[in-house]
Image (cartoon, rainbow, N blue to C red; front, side):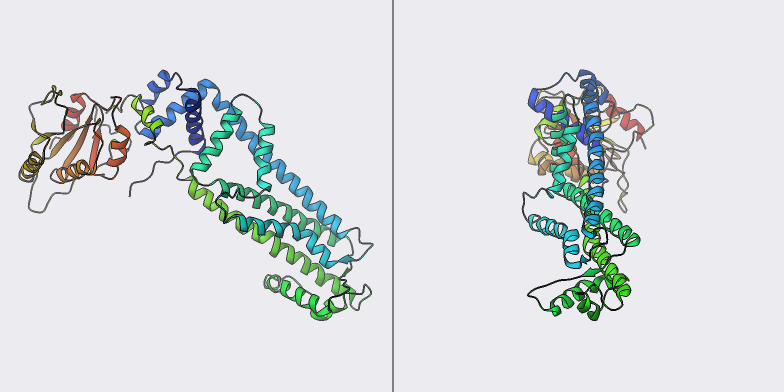
Length: 466
């Protein structure tokens, strides 16, 4: 399987920002950017280089850098507020120790809002318009407040667009929501442990209409999972006698109730948020790996058509692996050796093109062109007999690569040891160059040349002269 070309999030962000700017305000003056982009080997690399140069020239890179820094600052500010909120809620719930603590109200005060938020998040997850939690909306809002300057609106729009294209927006915001709640609950748990370590609290429960068995069963159910992790919990007798402050074995009851309260905070508060944070983060990472510009969109097709083509090196130093040089030699067929003949075949050429092309040396036999069903069958029979070492297939980039053409390329390449597709007229305004690049990814045994001059073809033949 072909390894997918990866790019950083900032590169995708820059590409999308330039895309939005040119879509809204028209094409920019990119003569210098196109000149620099022509030195890149792959279409995505060309797009990235062009976007980087245009962003630096327009100041958009600076705006994106400032927005990114503001985003991190806003996130850490929110986490700081979550720590203060969690610790304050714990101290306010437990009080100063002069009054007994109602264990039911204490647990509901520390976990009630978190549980409600978690239920709402799970329900809204079923909706296609889910945003990942209201709490996470505070993060983009605060980021926009902290980030000031030109093009900030465009940078924010591009940021949202990139995540939306990756279908990861809700998971990114969900990660933020769970991290904020996890931080708040960790702070509350830490503050609870600190208060229990420095003050003496008596725990009671109170009721007017309910039976004591209701609280015994309720405490027992909640204590099941914390017990698995070693937290101490009160037994049924201590639960029943906890309606009185002056109960028997008050010291033991305080320790057991403290362990039960902390265990419930960790197991039913912190742990679910940790697990959900990890799950949402993994989803974001997986979908982040698929972020890349859509080279078949009309915008990028137009951009690539204006960038000069890839330039083959004249020496023997091979360029880095890319879509332009992705093939390997065919293994020899059993009992059938390849001849030393070099063949040049044109597939549905323009009648105005000279055939054979000027500049092709005498070492190459020119066959074709293939422009009908009869000529296709005739040349396939000839290929099965000749079986050349090097085969050059000349295609017109102005024709779309349909299934029949791709099948013909595959059939012809199977009869040769090495195959090069020479894509001509790829700079024409009607050229379908990106479509050719995309379709030929499924034919890894074929190399590609998108220079119009015959010299590059002859260089390839000389390097592979057997």
